[in-house]
Length: 349
Ligand SMILES: NC(=O)c1ccc[n+]([C@@H]2O[C@H](COP(=O)([O-])OP(=O)(O)OC[C@H]3O[C@@H](n4cnc5c(N)ncnc54)[C@H](O)[C@@H]3O)[C@@H](O)[C@H]2O)c1
Ligand SMILES: [Zn+2]
Ligand SMILES: [Zn+2]
Image 1 (cartoon, rainbow, N blue to C red):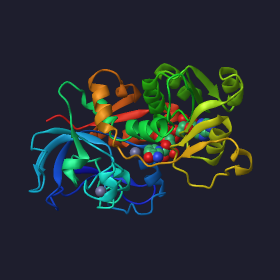
Image 2 (cartoon, rainbow, N blue to C red; image 1 turned 90 degrees about the vertical axis):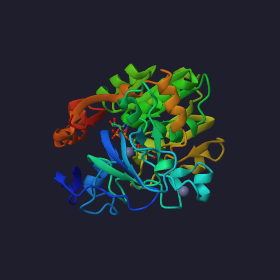
Image 3 (cartoon, rainbow, N blue to C red; image 1 turned 90 degrees about the horizontal axis):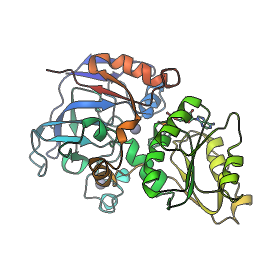
């Protein structure tokens, strides 16, 4: 089969590699129908994820058809079309029993395209297939499901749910990349009063406005505190969601929230940020962090199937697998290309 293989920092290629085989009874082999690229794949390519070793296949988001199951797979069948989640779940450990699949102690968690070969391939081995895949409901396009592999549950669980968004809230979302935009889509499910999108790139703010932000602020030009004060009678946002991953945006999320409000951090941070406890100890804040668990995936599938959530609105570019290198270039130069999510589908036949 062909697969997108990592060969060390800055190096990847669409190689011919051996087909995956069942190595545990709970495994399934899945023929990939469509796959996408995550910002985390770009971090891996830069060499930021040292446990991702050369020779490994990239990718942790896909939809496909099951072609083989191990003897321990009981609820998935050959020929079934499924969503492959970015988080695998053993289903039996303490954290899985609590729905905290991201923290799985039984060999799951974020393993695909991280600790084992990933989904950017014609075939992929998926461990714990019963508890790590979701059947695609009839009539739901593969592209809609693909967006539920990672970014929609991440933004919903770590941003909107951790931030406890309530009807009428003023929600400020810092960063309007795919994650911040998915936070806009899922915050809207709660009928907030105002969604304020904050970014440095006007193209991203245009996308935010199209997807439902009521107010957009280019923080390179304007101070978002002014817009938020105006909307909230000077109080501050009820909820701030950090979707960038640099110290200044986390610090801004804490500054922009009202007393008693919620700060939900989604960004992956590589450097320490300053928490001004000397200023905020008195403000009754709740600050949360998190890795996605994907325990919201069944609910998000229902919302997509019922037409309540248009996850595919985040897709800007489409390629076939033979164009994988171009897909990566487009996604990596998102600013110039106006790219949000790119979808790569298997060649026909
Ligand atoms: N917690 C989790 O489980 C989880 C899962 C997936 C992704 N993430 C993280 O979420 C973050 C966002 O992901 P993404 O794919 O949307 O990234 P992205 O790089 O596509 O988007 C980030 C956006 O932030 C904007 N930005 C950069 N610096 C800024 C600043 N100083 N002020 C305002 N805006 C600024 C950029 O213009 C861009 O639009 C990343 O840190 C990513 O690693 C976390
Ligand atoms: Zn991802
Ligand atoms: Zn587990």
